Amino acid sequence: MTVGSIETEALTGVFAGLAETAVRHAVLRNYETLPNSVGARDVDVLVHPDDLERATRVISGVAKRLDASFAKAYRDDMIVQIILARRLGSGKIFQLKIDLLHNRQIYGVEFLSAEQMLAETHLHNGIPVVADTIRFLDKWLFNRFVGQPTDKKYNDDFAAIARTNREALTDLLAPTIGRERAGSELEEIAWCRASEMAPMPRKTRIGLLAKNAMRRGPTGLARVVRFAYHRASNYLSPKGIFLSVSGPDGSGKTTVIDLVIADLEVIFGADAIVYRHFRPTVLPRIAEVAKSAGAVEKVDTDYDRPHRSRPSGTAGSLARIAYYSIDYIGGYVRSVLPELVHRRVVLFDRYYYDMIADPFRSRISLPLPLLRMIGRILPKPAHAFFIQVDPDEIFRRKQELTHARIVELNHRYEDLARRGWLILVNNDGAPETAAAAIVDHIIAAQDSRAQRLLPGAPRP
Image 1 (cartoon, rainbow, N blue to C red):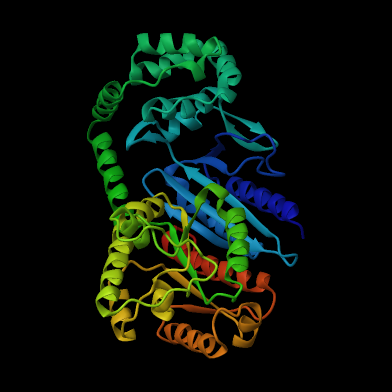
Image 2 (image 1 turned 90 degrees about the vertical axis):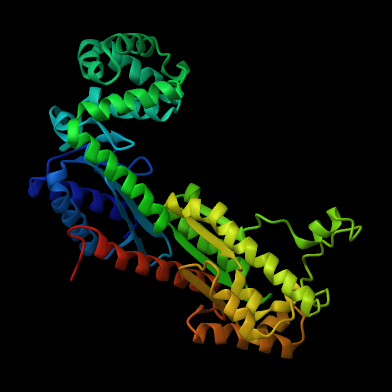
C-alpha cells in the first residue's frame, strides 16, 4: 500500500460513511481533488452540531479499518480537529487531517449557523460542497473580524463571487456589518481589491462583535462564555505536545532528532514543530552575563568540547542551578506554554535531565539527590526520551571523555529511566529505528487520549 492509495481509501470511506449515516455535512474549501486526495493541508468539513458524534464514529471506523491511529484529537466550542496517522512498511507515514466545524463563529460570536451554511449545497464527485457565497463569507468574515488581511490568491475568486451574488451577499452581511458597509466592501471585492483593503479598526471590530453577540440574545452570550472557558482551559491544560530527547555525546542523538522532526513534520506540518536546545534561554548564557558585567573579557564558544571547563565550587554551582531553574520556569511560561496553547509540538534537544545525569557539562558540582529534588519543581515534558548506546560505541565515536566516565553517564541516564523520568530508546542499531520508536510512542499516547476525548472515538 502506498501513502496515496491509503489517502484515497480513507477519504472515500469518510465521505461514504457520512452519507450512509445521514450526517448533514458539506466541504468548505479545497474540494477539487476529493475524494482521490486532499490537495491541501487538511479537509475542512462543515457538520451539523447534532451530527458531530456520528461523524466522529465514521472517522473512527475508517481509522480502525486502515489500522491508523489518532495522532491528534482536539475539541472546543468551534471545531473538532483530527489527524490520522499510520507508519507504512516502507518507513513512510500516511497522515490525514480533518477539521469538523459546525458554524462560523469568531471569538465565540456566531455569524453563520450550520443551517444557513448547509441550506444550499452542490455535489462534486458525489461529495456535498457549500455554496460559493458561504465559502466566501466563511473566509471573509474571519479575516475581517480578526484584523487579518486577505491573501492575494483569493482576489479573482472572491471578485467573481461578489459580482455574481451581490444581492444575496448584501442581505447576508447586512445584519452583521450593516447594509452600507456591506455594499461598499463588496464593491471593492468585485474589483479584485480584496487583498488591498485595510483591516477594520480594532474599535470597530469590537463594537460589531458585541452587537452581533447581543443580537443573538442569551444564546449568543452563552457562546461567548463557552469561548472564554475553552480559551482559559487551554492555558491551564494546553493540548500541544511537549517532548525532549536526552543522551550523552556520541549517542547519535542529533541524527535521531533530525529523523524524529522529519516524521513529526509529515504528521503535524512543518509550521507546527518548535525546536529548542537544552533550556528555553529567555535568560542569556551565564558567560554572556559575566562579559556584560566585565567579569570576563571573552565568551568561550568552543561547543565541540562541552566538558572543557572545570565545575564551579558549591557556591558557584548553587548560583548556576538557581539561574538555570529561573530560566526553565520563566522560559516555560514565556516561550513554551504559548506554543503548547496553540497546539504545536515543542521538542527539546537535551533538557534538565541532562543536567542531572551530566552536571559537569554545565559546570555544576552538586549532590545528585539535590539535582533530582530541583527537577521535581521544574516544568517537565510529557514525553522525555533517553538515547541509549553501548559505551564502547560511544567511546569509539568521541574520545572527549574516558570510557569509565561514559559508562557512569549511561548509568545515570538509566537510573532516571528506572525512576520514570525518562523513556529508554536503544540506538545500537539504525537511527531510523530509534526515531520511529520515539514517534510511535507519541502517537500511541495521542491515540489513547483521543479515545477518551472524542464522542464516538473509542474503538474495540
